[in-house]
Amino acid sequence: MRAETTWQVVIIKHGTRMTTRSDAFMNYSFYGERDAPHRVDYYFWVLRRGDQAVIVDTGYSRHEGTRRGREVLIDPVDALRELGIDPEAGHPVVITHAHYDHIGNVDAFPNSPVYISRAELDFWTSPMARKTLFAHYGDPTSVDALEPARRQGRLHTFDSEVVVRPGIIASVVGGHTPGQSVVSVTTVEGVVMLASDAMHFHEELERDMLFQSMADLPASFDALERLRRSPAARIVSGHDARELSRHAALPGALSNLAATIGIA
Ligand SMILES: [Zn+2]
Image (tube, rainbow, N blue to C red):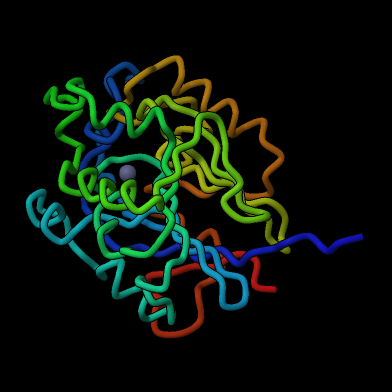
């Protein structure tokens, strides 16, 4: 029997900001709870196996981060170099959705195959994406940066799911954005589900709450239910401030900013 293809998951915190619970959760007043400070951390993910790597999301660009007053803890591209990964080496890049904090810096991967769901790409290249409630979270420069990838045959869109590499599957769940995707990764510790912004904070899954900005509410609840029913051993959030503490710190220079699951 062929051994399963297992990957190491690295979770990298590249940004952070303080806000309030009433800002983080949609219609927070409905819960009848007091407001309180709430930290939002910004992550991207790297899957490694020997000298192979798959990058899941590319963080926010310095320009978009600065424009929004987001603190840059480490530039995602610098973090990759710190991990010994050359962004120009052509490693696959998966974009879970096209919000500015997930697709920024995609132009730093000029040789990579880029995977994004068709529903996501169609939405962000449609007139609907220019409405303020959506555009607020957009990064048109980075969406435009997918065009050379398309011309060069490096852009791979998918409708339901795609096997990026054996053991790595991106699946569309929608809800937060029309083509929001999650990524399941086989590791020696079982399947790890990178929920990205299908679950910004673990509290959403635990209490059936939603983040403040969701494109489709029923689809968002369905996505949470799908995560609950998944056989994954661990579910990794898109923005939970306690995410790193749930896993082992990554040894080395990024230990304060990165955690890891499934070191073979
Ligand atoms: Zn996000």
